Amino acid sequence: MSILTAGCKVNLGLRITGVRPDGYHEIDSLFYPLPRPCDQIKLRVTDVSGISVLCTGPGAGVLDAENNTLTRAYTAFAQAVDFPVPGLEARLRKGIPSGAGLGGGSSDAAALLRWLNGHVATPLSSQALAEIALGVGADVPFFLHNCPCRVRGIGEIIESVDLDVSGMRLVLVCPEIHVSTPQTFADYDAFAAASHAAEKQNSLTREQSRANGTFLSQGRFDADLGNDLENVVFRRHPELADIKATLLRYGATAACMSGSGSSILGLFRREALVEAQAAVAMLQGENRRVYAHVL
Image 1 (cartoon, one colour):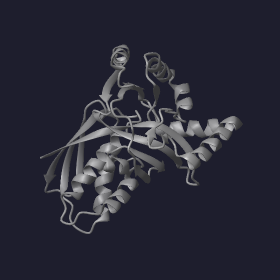
Image 2 (cartoon, rainbow, N blue to C red):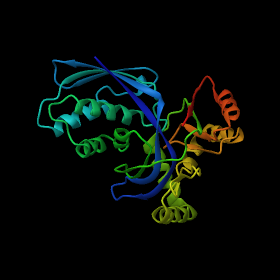
Image 3 (cartoon, helix red, strand yellow):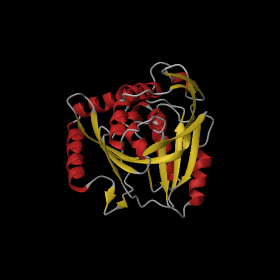
Image 4 (cartoon, helix red, strand yellow):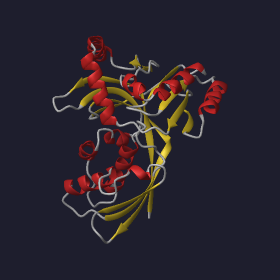
């Protein structure tokens, strides 16, 4: 029996920099890994080829037992190699909420890919494993790195970065709201098409990203955590805007939605322990999970 722990990620800002002909959106974002919330995967090698997945925990109700990231990762790995892959029974306990912009499914897939690559006769190179990961999901390659990274394109351009955030306090609020990523991007496209001003701003963002890099200034973290998807997501879920406003009101130096939502994060300065604790106490509730981290 092997037990894997799959952490999550937050986006410290997210810009939409373009749309490809195939409809995929290009982004520029800082991905930051967090140990909590997390998923747990128990693996048992079996004599039967393939993988079976049983899911429990808060996210179990939304997992398709036949079409999930663990099954896709296993299948993609097995198809990419010319040697036997052990059959597996996977028991996934979900701790990362679904539809929260935290990359839970992608983290699970990356954890399984790493395990598989360490349990075959001829491990794949990092590049080959990353190519398989990208085919499983856009965020999966990042979780193979599992360190702060600037992520661009559709997730295939990944650069490790040395962020100057040590000692800062991060409060992560996870409400029981499931946000559909495809719906969010469809809303974003509709809004951009209907608003000439929004299109001009997107163009400006692209120019700034090419010229200066996004969110990084001379190697230091720029705490302007803009997320281009917030506008459309907050229209559908006003509660998320209220959570962001509360974090700022309690002293966060910056706050934003992670990914396409629904989780909201706030960054507090090192010395703002009392403020961060007050924000956690205020936002913790029956329909919310709140996590406090020291970076």
